[in-house]
Length: 399
Ligand SMILES: Cc1cc2nc3c(=O)[nH]c(=O)nc-3n(C[C@H](O)[C@H](O)[C@H](O)COP(=O)(O)O)c2cc1C
Image (cartoon, rainbow, N blue to C red; front, top):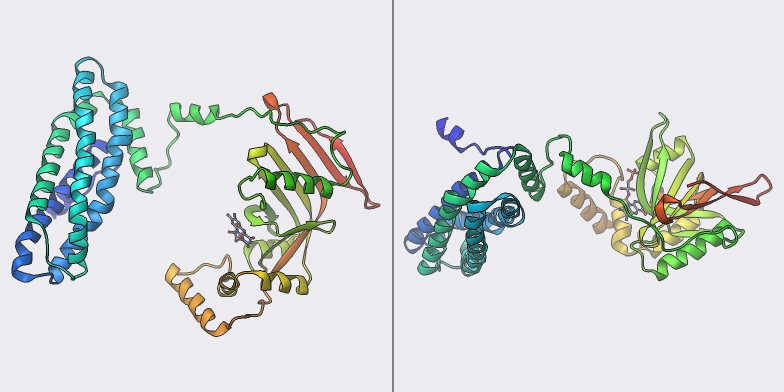
């Protein structure tokens, strides 16, 4: 019980204690490495040796790098920004040594990495005594350097806000969501200050084409030419029967006078929404051109033979994925999903038929707005609305 308590890792509200705890774990791995040196000549790469080698490998391949990144990318820069006078002088002398230590230890690790991999796989019993000794000595001296100077300096100098920032950065690095806490005032201000002024182009009533589909085609061609990232990716918003909207990205596969189409699973969440409410909205954002296009209208399914043609044009693996996945339904694990795919792949042959629940939708536009970013938020907006006789009326909207 007491050892459990002793071993419990501190949480990220105490980032320096977390770093120190990491040192404890590094020391354990180093001790395992030394034991392995003694174990191998007597027992060879037995189960125990393979497991020990695997554990050391896993730790130094991942956790140790994260620990070095914590120091290089957050702790040392924060100390540099904070330390003054004598502290700043100590840091100036110490930081390059710490950074050099990391490089040296990485180089020493490379030698051990190969040997430990072979031991973990049971194909070798070779572990270089001198490589282990140098690695252990180098890490031990390094940790002592940090524990005697950098850690106490951070504890003395960092404000609670800096500690919180350091802890959050370390959590992010490990893919752990930071606890829901208000943004620090500095970060909150930084988010609020994120702004870009637009000024590449303008959009004038006189420039736009009478037909919004033609206008869209012209902009789409410009997006292709400008090599914008995923020009055919659009956000599709649907509204469920209970009135709640939801959005996701899909790829436009065709657009013409009939509308804008994409392909998906008819039993998905979006499929269910569209069954209950056939109105939807599409949004293209071509950031590189400072443009967005908003399209609204009613959605219908594409004709079965059109869906068949598109289904057949897809790579075989994508067709099999479409058959194997009950899109939007929960599943226990990735392994289960892949098992379902394998079952489908085994029985499907080279030309699987399109499943009935997979196909195209087409949004028939009633309203299309073209938006061009302009300086100081004085943007251009031209909106087209379909009239009862099928023609389009257009007008400028205020930004
Ligand atoms: C770039 C990108 C392209 C995508 N294209 C499609 C697509 O064409 N069809 C599709 O069903 N899902 C596509 N997805 C996945 C959807 O965003 C979404 O996860 C999926 O359709 C399930 O949505 P739903 O549960 O709301 O129905 C795409 C996602 C991204 C990020």
